[in-house]
Length: 264
Length: 322
Image (cartoon, rainbow over all chains, first blue to last red; front, side):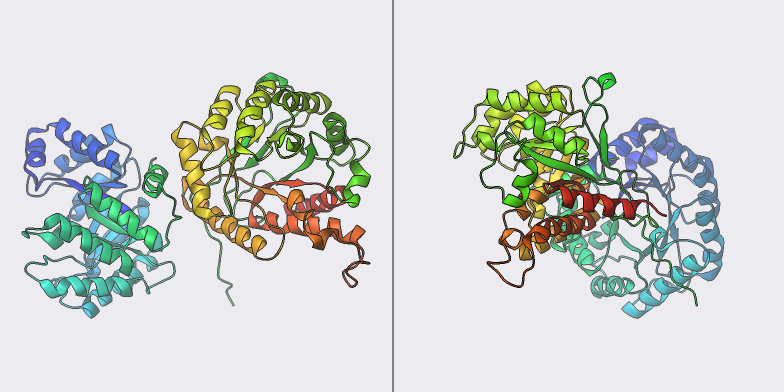
């Protein structure tokens, strides 16, 4: 599994304040906490806290001052990605692009130039996908464009777009079916990722829903998620799912072994 | 027509383990032996780097074995009352890369030799040859925990490969290994999961993963060989893919297993059609070793000089591109 820590996001009050007051300590606190919890990447997102590219670059540099964990540059503005990617110490993930041709034409070369990975959201300007086929079609478009323009399968993350269970219940299963079909796109397949917390938005049993949904997605072929990496039970459940699917070698201390193997 | 490129790239090379210490390194060996370090499956030189080729250790006991077949006896009976002479013959005449001293004489169900006698055997071998040394206990846990501390002390600083630790007996040896700077053989009973667990347990109490060689048990016939082959192959793939608790070099204990199966030993008169056992025995050992090389073995422990010679040729042919 590839775990991307979601917490450095301007949508959280403490991060918003940190950005506005240029307070490094809060951002660095979350960079460390999430790295220790097992994050393979740290998502960096300004949310609505600022619209200045300097603030975004400052966030990335602040994270990199304290941990070696690579970042996921989370912005839908191409200019922000282009500026921030230049200060990245390790190849980042670009989070994200939609399947629109003009967007792909612009962002894929940036990823190729910086040896970065790219998350492709299976939606386009017509909006969010409503069924399985639409997701798969958009995913295939993103994947083939990415490969044609020079990314490897290992650098492409397809995101079938998670929607809240509470409001769009049929979409959860549609997503899982789309995950299953993404695995057939190529061999080896691209990475498949979800922004996990969306599934439980405004629900009461948030952690339970997140956990069960992630397990079901992994069974279908998903191998990456942006999530609350400090939820230890969530990560252990994901690792256990992969053990049950025979993706790693079992031992009585398999959780410890998995976590040690991932430590840089 | 374009032929597709089937090369794989593996993210995690197998650990390198160096056995033996020269004078400069605090020991008395004339050379050291490094195994592991490979970044690909065995002998796929087109795919990745394998900086060290597999090595052969020849087996020496601390007393004259009563149950070795005639085919082995004829090579060793003139020296096997003295582990020093025996080891020297293996190195001088049969080109052993290293010596595996098996302290079989300490087995309480057999000769029941004392820990001092075990230490003495280690000393004799160290004095008689200058190649690196593997020291293997008698297989009885309690007794090994008595004799191996003495052996470890006797060979302190020589960076020997000591064995074995198991899932339920590892603490004493890990402590010794850390104190006297040796490396350890982690044994498991034909079980990929336990193989991993032993490594985790040893690492937990402070043994560096780089000091471990995996011994997943060895079979020389039928299902045994198939099981172990699959375990080694799958484990190696896991190690290369990033599982740090399977990213260790592998050891195969060939001679001991081969020379106890009747297919390798029984004379033609007893089973007509099997061919001359004088040829069949060493051939069985060489072919078995060859299978284990293909499975990923980095150290092969052997007995018959002719089998050793054949295997050396084979290793040479696979590792030298000419």
